[in-house]
Length: 343
Image (cartoon, rainbow, N blue to C red; front, top):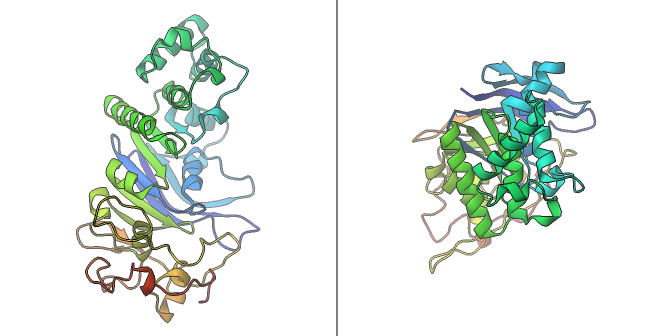
């Protein structure tokens, strides 16, 4: 297993609830694994744990195994080597990763130097090869340019080239395409898939777009309030989502076509770190919640066809797509209630 996160819990002294709570997640070589959820659900924190860049005052329990080594136990030179060579991250905004007064070639040469390539001429040649590998035309010209001379899509290719400089085994893509237009997004997604196949990369793909995750990934994890609430093979996510939160995300995602149903927003608001829970964190927003949900401690339960979901109402939840009195219909939903340990 390339990435194996085991029961990871991350606590902050001032927070009423954990940043992450008992998160378990796996990524194999050549596999694309999606991680979805609302803002603040813990997606980026999970990726940062893989790089061991959690806040200084955070306390982490559990293990984050990358190719068999626990990233949370690494310090000093071993941690720097882990961040420089084993794992690489591609962020949402490529301009934030590039120094605006330095040339593209300088950025790549610096990344190559961290991998132990002291020869600057050889590193410059390798930089041109990397830009060519990510599909930038005329790479010899681009290495001499500054970031402001390139478009957003071209800069994202530059950042991906930098991430590949050390030939990592695992790539973390944190909203890597959300700032791009649709055409450029499709190009970057195709590039990432091609690179994954060529280099046997494992890819953890973080996104808000559930439709994109279901279409692009092999498996998908859904997070809410720092917990994994569902894990399914991507092709099953639309047809057989099991957790009410996953169904809620699908219900408020726009669709095309004559049969598209009206949008049905999830009531209430996403929880903050100031919200504490005695039971299921989603209970105050859930159309299926019962009083017992306020004290039930979430645990992953197997679902038919494979995967897991953390809901005490399984397997007796009604099919949300079966009837006119669909619980995903806005008129069937409860009024929005405050997030917290009581409803």
